[in-house]
Image (tube, rainbow over all chains, first blue to last red; front, side, top):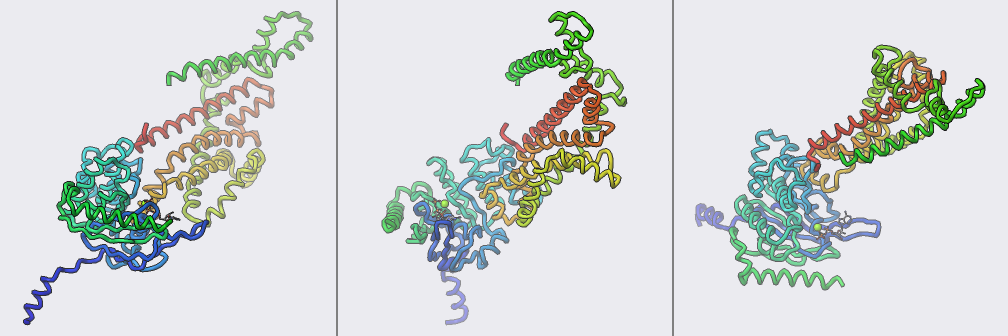
Length: 275
Length: 288
Ligand SMILES: Nc1ncnc2c1ncn2[C@@H]1O[C@H](COP(=O)(O)OP(=O)(O)OP(=O)(O)O)[C@@H](O)[C@H]1O
Ligand SMILES: [Mg+2]
């Protein structure tokens, strides 16, 4: 084998993707007045660049907690976690991720546009640039035209979209979303799911997405993480291989139903061993 | 607004009627005394008329106070020592100075208490115990002590106003600066915002409604503080001085005019603060 051939072989090998989130044996125990709460136990997970990972599981299984550990809003009590090769704390200092909370958490005294520019202001980006980026972000969530409105003038769904625009405005490569569409009706939800998927396909962002909905998880994800409570842990990780430009129609396909079935089985198994 | 005018008028008329009836009853004994000493016969009609026109009544009638107020507010040069406008200005200037300093002090204390753990432990008990000392006891001491080191006039009165009005501001601002929800604080954290940025972008705007609520209380008690500050040393000018002089010479009409003027000034100040509040909150996009 000549050197040239070796180089070629290496190039042809599927390039192993960069790990954005790398979690090993992670555990988190809350010390409360009624004794310890084992929110996460022995969690192993790798999220690669460009992945769309959904977390699904019954209430209290630690989905939010896991996302918060990644975001450095909560400190793990055991195990290792790295974001882009550095600690969550450093990653937060580098503004490596955009976080979408379960509630919109818009600042009521700021117009929609100024809510979206808030992170940019904090990151000390020039005013023209801020306005330009806010325009782009608001367009992505179809809220252009509402720049000057205040949050109370928008419906709940629109507010949540504004909060997504805010997380998109500074163009972080990692998006952490905690049940962003949990409070919305089915139709709006489908629509936002489509938009989110398009955005993801176009930008190659890495997304970690918490949901309670099995179809939502299967439709959106490249990887579905099924969790179970007491102690919060991962019981199944399902990889899917739908094309990036999938449409809502895939929900009728046998593969889709098969994966949805496997998720449901996993959830059921997690449920049965706690009583 | 217009729906309120009716009820407010009814209450006002009821108060006036009550006041007249009270004036007649309060002043009748001295008036009867006077008739008897002069060996004069009198009718009820005459008694009522006379009780409402005494020179030094125990309770002056509303129209007597109104006439006195007209005379000392509009019918007199405002530079005159008898002008209530002049006295109001003397009191108002120290009220405003004390209010300004007190508000600033209150806000600064609150900022310190919210941001520095040890300040909360060390300062908060002092802030609270400062208000357990009755102002009437401490006011003369402040005037005398400051007078002894050569500080007289406006400043000692303003100090008393400050002493009274920083307290509600501190308490409200501590509450206001702590009012952001956990989720909003977490949001700032995800942006790696500095303490200063979090303060400026989140804590301060959240505290605005709390601040204004306390400012309405603060401006009113600031005026009380200024008046109280004018009492102990028999100050030459100010609404407090008018009250004191009035009570020395039994000039009840003067006392009541000064009192009502003080009440009007307080009301106007509170209305101005309320107006500022509406303007600021409207600019902050608060739902009308
Ligand atoms: N700050 C905290 N202190 C103590 N216990 C906590 C705290 N936060 C979460 N927990 C506990 O940790 C467990 C996991 O909570 P978490 O919020 O991560 O659940 P979740 O999977 O997001 O649930 P849901 O679907 O209802 O949002 C729960 O038992 C919860 O009571
Ligand atoms: Mg949750």
